[in-house]
Image 1 (cartoon, rainbow, N blue to C red):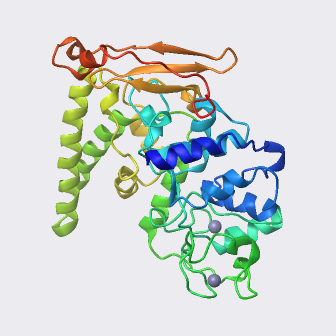
Image 2: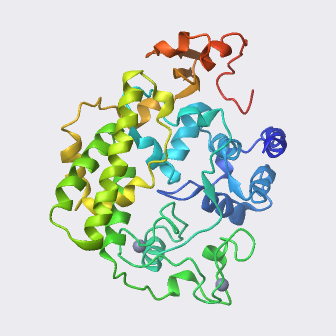
Length: 369
Ligand SMILES: [Zn+2]
Ligand SMILES: [Zn+2]
């Protein structure tokens, strides 16, 4: 990955002006935006960086920063704004511990998460609605394999082209089919397939509502609520359903035990499990998002608006999380360690070893510095 990053690091110097780019649309996936920009302005000055992005199998930290920068959203704030509004990874960051002061923890300075790839799926009814409203359509972040149904129209998302049966992908059938069609046909001509799986719809709606939450949601509260709910639901089930619900109870119980330990030692750096998988359990147990919110309010949690943490990243810490908040106006970064853990002081701790290494924090736009 290092080689890829350094290649793109050079590319960041190719200036893309946000005025040349189309507006990124609500819930548009990053790969849709890259391909759509190129489709509209293939030969435009500065599009070399976007062309290069299409050669990578997926978009990670460096690639997301290039898009954010091109949109005129630089720095940590712009990076997280793009992730929050245009990738499914947002779910992982909306569920949060009170001790976490960053939006995406260390992802602003690390390159180990794939934020988006080139697989895509579409709802024919959404395409038809978009054509009426915008005159064109685009690919959404709510997509297969994780989301299988359109939350708006309750139709099965199509991951294969209805005209040639190829999977939408990076090379076999690139996303341009949305704008140039296939064999003389266009995706708005596709016949939509009604969904007959109520759980798949509930899951799609739930993920959409989680992503639309104006506030962070308590991760500890969610685990606690799922555990209690699983325990009460199990009593009314039998056979395989009861066994599955019981298994979920024990999973949540074990997770809660480990979270209790992390909370006790003030260690936000440990809360880095993927929360996306949890949404399937949430949809299974809860009728709707309002029921989830009802249960979460019973837990002590600081309500923070989503964009309040976009400027902050976790700058380090193994036993104790420490943070840097970027001040893009003054070009400064403010370091803080709000919840020091007693284990960090131990000579055997990784944090203690790190204090022996001097480190320079770059600010504010890491990719441009
Ligand atoms: Zn739809
Ligand atoms: Zn096709």
